[in-house]
Picture: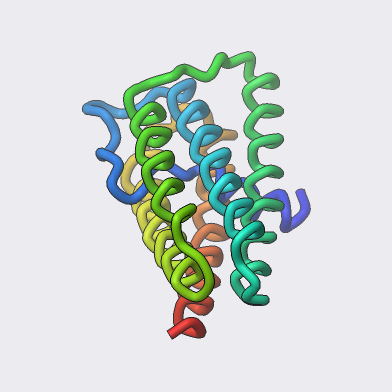
Length: 175
């Protein structure tokens, strides 16, 4: 697999949006993990696409372009894996909470412009990626029962930590 595909796998693990409730009680099943991951990837692509329409900052736009590319690639990988494993993603309270929180955050960001937008978008991305890293380590990886899925998530965690660092660097540059 190419590094871009592994970076995309990192996005496969997105679980939490700032303000969203934690995962529903009990460990998620592989079909639930697949749905949560796909939903979260779509959410981050939407946030990045919003940034690409609103931001004129080179660093913010570069970060957003990376997020679109990586998260769209992971959604393809996620779908390929789901088809290979013959698993039907299962909607759940967590994926529904992700969508609700993302809509609220998108509405807030959409009202902003210029440097205010840039700072808010990047701050949201830093928080989002921190939560993802934590969710991968404490929930997703331990809950995944399929060895291939677990391996992808473990690789993804390493790459996703790079996304978090990138977001933190962009945030520091905006201060």
